[in-house]
Image (cartoon, rainbow, N blue to C red):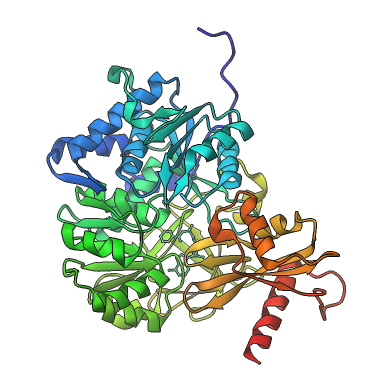
Length: 548
Ligand code: OOB
């Protein structure tokens, strides 16, 4: 026994009011299921069925569970303890699924980072979550994550353990983990927090989203019904597996819950995904709009047999009606629009909806107990057909972020509504149509970039006097980022500023696509202008000049 007391750490909680808890249970939404509970059950019932396909791996349900238990016991043997938080940064490889299942099995708490994230983001997640460990791959998409691991440990020494898929170098390889399986804990409380997901982040750095077993399992179990996922389905993960869309809408967890087969595509492009679709007879896949258009075009020319595809889901960013028609025509299968958020609420068009609904709307909520409120700037509900701010509450929408009182005060009302930041309309038949964002972020092909976060990094440059980052409509990406910069005495080159942002340890998708130097942020308004107004003015002026 060591005599150093266990470190104090902020408890992970997600709490709904008692009457809601009682109702969500009575309604059969929350069934007391847990991740290890359902995974063990499937390993027994569907033991010989194919669960995960990726690279050279083809794991049955029994093999996946065995891998999860081996890694789980190994992590505890290395000194981790139930309740510890572990940052996981893995790409679309089978080990991602095995490691996450292992963490659940050992009652360790995954904190999901995207492969594109770099030191600044990963260190932020580790600090906010008070993580003690980091799991990464030796290499993914030509980046060596062991370098990042070293920097992370220097910056956040509380991250005592690093586990690596592949050649571990000085770190512990995941493949070598093992331990006493009898030492593994029992199943967790279904209302406890299972993992921390990452927010899209509209102001500053990403917030951490605590999701419980009960709430998350409900969201993908109910999604399975709406997306047509059953034991015969083959679900492809083409987007980064750590993102909420391919994870739970219905995602690979929905597929595993149903006893279906999960196929991990190492890249999102048709060149990589199409041969896999043909080989594995994939039936369902989730894409972001630019990718869906790329696939639709490529499908016309491909020699690969895509006839197994039944449902192509598109979400993460707005799919405009003309693009939706092209996707349907190009891929020749059912389109399902998905409008969701890592904080909870997910909307789907239904598989049997008339084409006009599928093409023109982003669908309606999963649950009869999802509450949706659309209000004007003063908070008064608006009639159908009028654009307003979307607020949400329900059996799988969070009530608070982890460890972030300021964000909680901003993002939640006193009576528990989550302010999504999205501007939407509701149609007479109850579907939502996304009109844009109320807050300043750039939705770059589904990847969310906070204007404020990038402005902060630009302002740190010695030759930047001021900077404002805005979204500009883009034919391919939907939106691209443009930074308006007032230079200091010497004007830096745009390439230099881009390299500067990248050098700050940020994901590459956050580097401004375009940099425009201006002498001043001229404004017609009198007195102090808010950053939001300023960004809106710069954007409007830029678009007017482009149009001229
Ligand atoms: C998904 O999750 P996040 O957390 O990366 O981003 C959420 C935000 C939404 O608030 C909205 O602004 C935007 O992404 N969004 C869409 C959209 N789907 C998401 N905007 C317009 N049309 C859509 N179809 O992006 C996400 C999570 C689960 C399922 C699907 C997407």
